[in-house]
Structure formats: structure tokens, C-alpha cells
Image 1 (cartoon, rainbow, N blue to C red):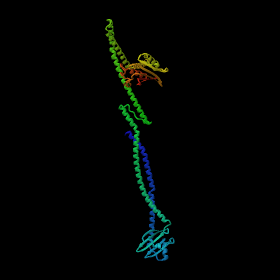
Image 2 (image 1 turned 60 degrees about the vertical axis):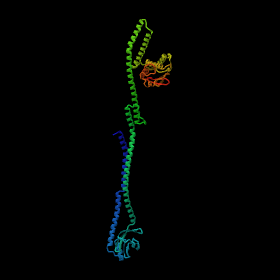
Image 3 (image 1 turned 30 degrees about the vertical axis):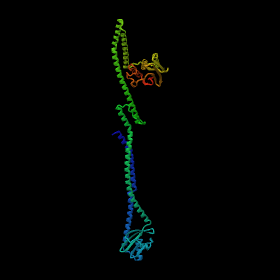
Image 4 (image 1 turned 180 degrees about the vertical axis):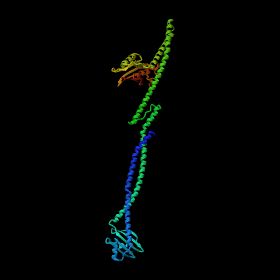
Length: 482
């Protein structure tokens, strides 16, 4: 599984699971509450109460039926009243062909009109007379209507209405409960879908943001491995990923610098090998040529001299041999590592001596700003004198006419900064980029080894050499005090 997928799963689970659990628990509690509100026990109790009332009325109805089925003394005055009292009835009546016979207890105060208006139907009836509830059983047969009834307890009608309302409310509550459970299920389902969908996209976005620095590092590693040493990662923030990206950029920079140094070292080593071979090949024939030239001059002297043209030719050959010897010496110096003999000495003393040796020449004018209180540093005075002398010599040879050379020295923190600037044509651009490459020069003659040798010596002193143009060639050297 990819790391991004694992991050996504963890964030999605951690973010969505509590919400899902909370939603399910809330749904369960709400459902339990609905169950308690619309509990089957409440419904059963209400229904049992209604059944008990119905059963009671049924028993009373059977009692009424038995009373009406027996012998009733309708026309016997007091005997009729006594029969009613024995049966514990409050009302007994009979309607037949427009005649009305009836008897009622002292608890009732109703008129004959009310009894005459009673419905001529069979069965139990609930009636109310002046706020008094009556339960009446009537029987109709062949135009004769007989009935009896009792006076119900006070408030019976009200309690009956309450029971009826309770039955209706219980029925409505059951419907509401079913609807609420269905609504709860729908809301819970939609909420789950919403939470999971939102959690998916939010987790994807967060995981993408978290994994982005790793993707940038992966791309940087790929580019770096492919040789693009100048590739850098854009860094923002101050978290662990930002620190890792900075470390990557530092590593890429160090790799790039090390590669440049390695290329320079390999190139310098190759040039040194070439210079060593050239010096060797030049020196080998020069020795016998020099000997033979010396013999020719001796033979010419013994014979009393010769034509002047021959003497001039021999002198010219001797001059070219010296130039070749000097060239071979340059190549030899470049090919071997400088052998430094360091000691505590003054930069000012070395520069003063260099200026004294070159200031009396006709085509050079040297000015200097060298402080008197420069500290002593560890260096090879002979090699450093060669460095300063070669720089002034290069300025003289690169200029077609007289040249002005300005030397400035100053101390900056733990280094001594030496700047030598001339009024000549300046360095060619290719020399600025390849300071340690021989045979790049602005002089009419020369090998271009001078600056390469200067750089070697400065490097051996743990210094830094900079070349640039500013209305002339500028050589800047930074020498550490320690």
C-alpha cells in the first residue's frame, strides 16, 4: 500500500469514525426514547382500560337483558316500583301504540317527554339528562319498545371522553412513532453518507497536502539522480518537511560544488600531466642542441670568426633556446605541486619588495595603499612574491603601452584582502570561467600558465582567488589570518 493511501486511510478513519459512532449512538438513544414515549405497555394499558369498560358494559347489558326477559308487572303500580328497586334499576319504561309506562328511582328527575323521545332501537345507549349520565338497554319488537337503565357515577361521561381521547392519542402516537422511526432511519442514513463523503474528500485533501512535500522531495531526488544538480525545492514554512527540503537543497548544493571541484581537480591533473610531458619532451632535445650550438660558436671562434650573418643566426638560435627553456620551466612549475616553506611574515614587506623590483621599469606605474599595521600570517614569502610579481608582469605584458597598477590591502575580520588592479584590456571572458586552464591569455606570446600557477599557490595557502574586470583586470586575493 502506498504511503499516501495509508495516510488517507488513517485520517479518514480517525476523522470519520468518532462522528459515525456519535451518530449511531444518538440514533439509538432517540429510537429508545421513541420506544419509551410510545411504549407498547402504554398502548396495552389504554386498550385494557377500554376493554374493561366494554366488558363492564357488556355485563350490565346482559343483566339488563335478563331483567327485560322476566315477568315485569307493568300495570301494578307499587309492585312495579318494588320490582324496579329489587333489580336495582333507576329507570324502566315501555312504549306501546302511543302509550307510555315507566318507573324511575328517586335519583332521577326526568319528564315523560324525555322518555317518549328515547330512540326506538335495540341495544345499549349512553344518554345524558341534565348532566346525569344514563346507561340504557332497549329492546324493540313488533312496535313495542321496552327498556331499562341505571344512573352512572358522577363524572362518568367526562372519564369516558378522556378514555376515548386517550385511545385516539395512543393510536396517533403509534403512527407518530412509526413515522419518527422511519424519519430517523432516513436522516441517519443520509447523515452517514454525508459524513463518509465529506470525510473522504477532506481526508484526500489533507493527505494530499501532507504528502506534497514528500512528492517534491521524490521529484528532487529523481532530478538530482538524473544529473540536474541545479534543481532546488521551493521551501516554505518551518516544519519538519521544510527542514528536510532545506537539507536536500544544501545536499544538492554540496554535491554540485563537489562535482565542480572534482572536475577542476581532474582537469588540473590532466593539464599537469600534459605540462609534465611537454616539459620533458622540450628539455630532452634542448641539452644536445645547446651543446652543439656552443661547439659551433667555439669552432667559429677558432677559425677567426665568420660572416656576421652566421653569428647573428647563432645568437638568434641561442635566444630561442632560452625561450624554450623558460617555457619548459613554466610547464615544470605548473606540473608539480608547490613546495611551501611557510613562516610568519608580513604581506606588506613582500609587496614592498615586489613594487621595488618593478617600479623602476619604463612601461609600468605602481601605486599602493598598504596599511602599516597588518598582522603577520603563515605563508611562503618566496611563493607569494612570485604570485605578486606574476600578476604585475601579466599586466605589463597584456598592455600594448604603459600600464598603471594599483595595489590596495585591507584587513576584514579574519582575512587579509589584497586587490591588484591595472589599466589594461582586462581578462578575456573565457579566462574568468576557466582560471586554472592553461593557454588562455591576452598576451601576444605566452602560455597562459601564470594565473593557473598563481591559483595553485593561493589554494595551497587556503586562500581564495577572484578575477573580474573593472576598467581593467582586477585580481582579488583573500588570505586567512589563521
